[in-house]
Length: 193
Ligand code: PRP
Image (cartoon, rainbow, N blue to C red; front, side):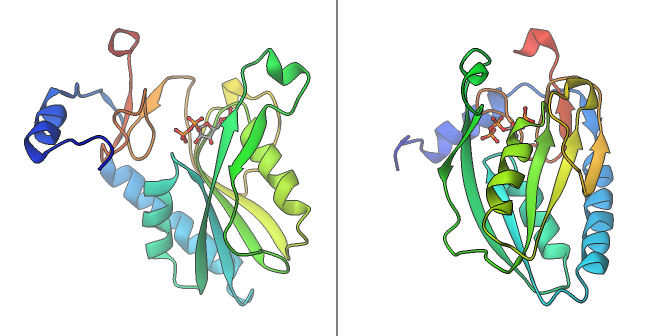
């Protein structure tokens, strides 16, 4: 294993993690994810199948909970993107694909699954990218949206929660790779960054 963390070291790391205050409880998240799954089931009831594309890393927990609540036939793909800084984005697309889907999505119904939409650049880029693959449709499902941060508008077809412009962690979201496995979504105050 690359990091070489033993069980004791892992437990000690977990014990030493600060616990950010709750913004959305585990129950609130699970309830909303169940509602989103029902909406998606209804929307694609006659579609004959759906491809869920999770955007790593932040979506991995949301996608796994959402997918397990769906009753319609579906398959899972993962992709990864990298973002450039603001200065570089003046001349180039601020987002770049660094890991593609494993199987082609032509003629299929595609649902892009994100943990959070902040500026909107990532999801707008991905809609353009996958829209060019001749899918049957491309829609988006995001757990969180920060409207105060919008720089690029993108249709949010399935949305979990609208939140204020605060730093959120947990349920897949990180701060410097920490807190992703918290079962709830916390608001990380400046003194914990
Ligand atoms: C987050 C999130 C989205 C993106 C949204 O990813 O998962 O992919 O930022 O931001 P935008 O709307 O401003 O484009 P992040 O870069 O934190 O990477 P991670 O998912 O690997 O943590």
